[in-house]
Image 1 (cartoon, rainbow, N blue to C red):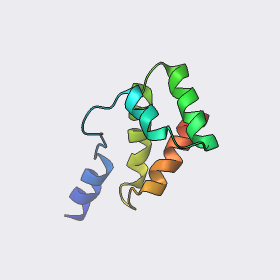
Image 2 (cartoon, helix red, strand yellow; image 1 turned 180 degrees about the vertical axis):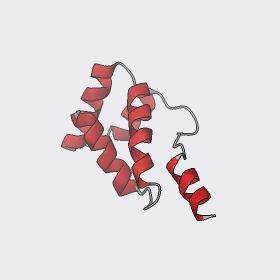
Image 3 (cartoon, rainbow, N blue to C red; image 1 turned 30 degrees about the horizontal axis):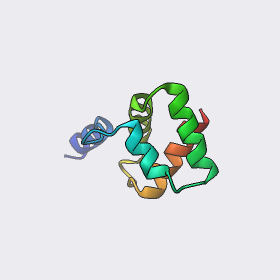
Image 4 (cartoon, rainbow, N blue to C red; image 1 turned 90 degrees about the vertical axis):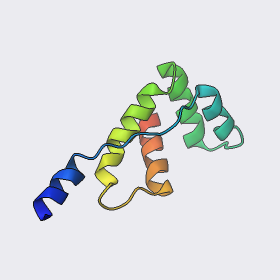
Length: 84
C-alpha cells in the first residue's frame, strides 16, 4: 500500500476546473495595486493569454500536493510565474 500511495502521489495531476478568461483575471486583479498583481498582468499580456500560466502553475503545484496547496502557496507560484 505504501508504494502504491507513493506512486499515485507522484503521478497525481493538478488541473483547474472551469474556464477562465483574461478578462476575468483582470477583474480579479482590478483592485489589487500590488507589484505582484501588476507584474502578473504584464506577463499575461506578454504571453497573450492565460494558458501558459495555468499549465505552468498547475505543474509547479504538484510539488506541494504532499504538504498542501494553500492560497499562500498559490500566490507564491503566481508571483514566481510573473517574474519568469
